Length: 323
Image 1 (cartoon, helix red, strand yellow):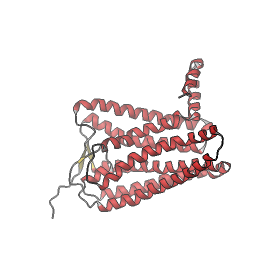
Image 2 (cartoon, rainbow, N blue to C red):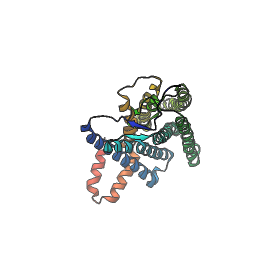
Image 3 (cartoon, one colour):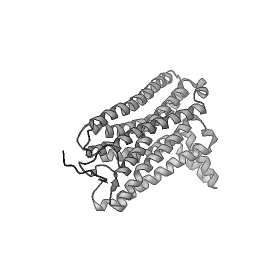
Image 4 (cartoon, rainbow, N blue to C red):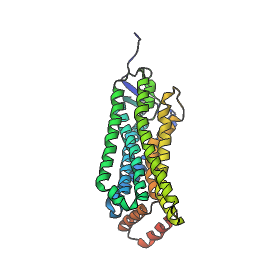
């Protein structure tokens, strides 16, 4: 029998061990988190209160904003707590719980991005039947399926993690608890988990990417048939934010999870994990709102209700349209 010490508590390595950087990092993450809350809540409130935004595209966008808000709230407060207390200690149960909720919200975002690509395909390629295909009942059912599939996927990982023994090290090389770094310190057989990752995550990634790829193939075919240049660019403008968000999200998350098969720890892993858990939830509402005339119009209407000096605000908002 091997002489092993079973761990009950873990320590997060954090982004930097220099004491002089704790306060700047704390202020940086706090600012990012507050901006994330403000932007995503603003998107949700605008869509919920403006009747002109009661369409499937903005319904899915409000769900995406809610997921970004939840995903950031799972990780960022813990990062702020560790920077403030300087302990970075976390129990096994709390660590796996954080992993469960993070994978749950991240998986929801993967499925939801695919649903949004199907929504764009229906709106562009089948505009006459759009209201029938993407009815409110169908939209609610699609979102419910997204949440159920994501819950099952994250539950499988959490149940498996509770049966894993951690005994190699007590330090997680990450800002928060995540499976690739968590299983680097386990002494259990990782082959089963790696197979599980490739089966389940592969099913999600391949299925989602296939649906998105086919949707945009038909979208591009339809757009190329449009003879008027202005109409063509207008259609492309509705797809650009979605494609941008997908490339950023998939690129950063795939780099983090598929390096699990290797035994090497890269210095950039912390930066990449910070990017898709802290920065992306802030970027998503900005990407979708800055170039979206409907969101800007709704924001303008809210400003005009609360700020009396309309003569000063309207020219400012007019210049914003030129961005």
